Image 1 (cartoon, one colour):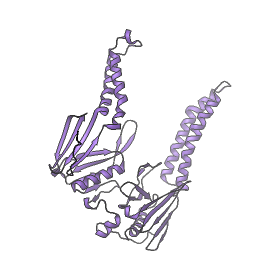
Image 2 (cartoon, one colour):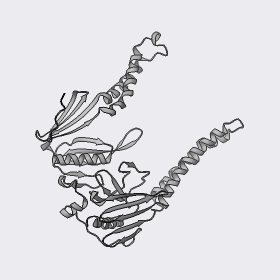
Image 3 (tube, one colour):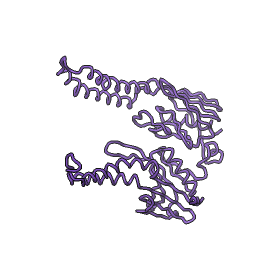
Length: 379
């Protein structure tokens, strides 16, 4: 059978199938198994009888959820020649629901981040939507990987020649389709980026060495702040709960036959081990972690952390954006340790990763260092 021909006028996005569908297999098998057991006579199956009012709904829910993941597919097809957007929900190859719109209804792509709350956790998604004032938005995807969402939005913007209204860094930034793959230097040379270097703020926390051709910044540890205080109180609260709900009752009833060794292990792990490690990490990040930034017209290098410092270097021609933005809980594909409280940082963005620095500095100092770094990178 010949492979289907791809068309330069068609943009596709698929969800489901492949390895992802295997996630639904256990749910489906459990649900089907419970339903089957319900109809097996007790004298044949043995064991306790499973009530009909429990077994059938329980099995049906698991089988439905598992079956939807196992057999469900979603395919989005955007056809420029036809001017249409079609989203198909399928069970295997059979369409069960279809949504269609016309491309002329939209004039921009919206990319932002949203926090979704479930019963047990919160998580961040990065929705991509087609929009136009006065028209109902059309959802393209809602992935949980920031860089993949950014790459997908840029791919779609290039395909449709539509601007991206990017809210990933807090404020709305309009990014034109024809400049998405340009470096910050190319954007500056074409006039789509500008840079003004103001006088330094009266008080600066960092040490800045700038000669017009290179920039070196040494940022000391952030020091005591509200985030550290909140974390310290939370750990202390946990310790008090442990003492009054577990340690004191145990010692009150302690005798020679008590499993003392087991208690010592549990006590050391929960009361000393985990809280101590967390507290040491917070103390280190607050009072020991420094940042070193080096910028030339060829590279941007950042070294930070403690006790083992990590250095990352970007080639300047790969940096597409350099912005002052709200602190991010994820850096590229790596999840940050703990981010407490508000604050801003400088973020260098490329197609596949982000690099941040400057957390803990004032807005005025960040703006000044950002302008200096940007001036070097575009020179």
